[in-house]
Image 1 (cartoon, rainbow, N blue to C red):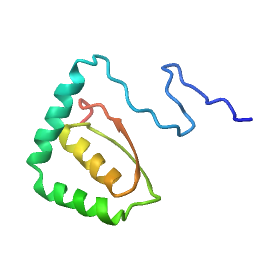
Image 2: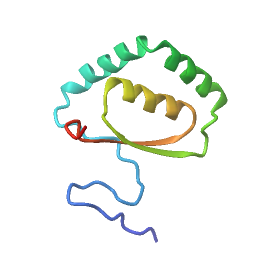
Image 3: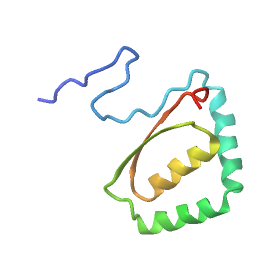
Image 4: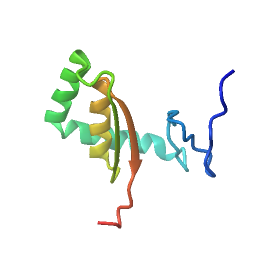
Length: 98
């Protein structure tokens, strides 16, 4: 029998289960995707690495977690790590902390 997934007060899983993400205003999703795509077009080296990673999958089996300022650039970094085969977890840090 499967065990119950422990939950925090905000409903996030704490046992390693993936959470797709939380978007307060779903109307912002399209705009966010467009900004990520714009940044991707201006990051040709990362785009080349992502293409190579997608073919070679050098990070397969790795689990990578990052806590950093989430920007369009770091979103593309996470996409690249995932293309390389890694299981990627990203949480946003406080941009006012540095």
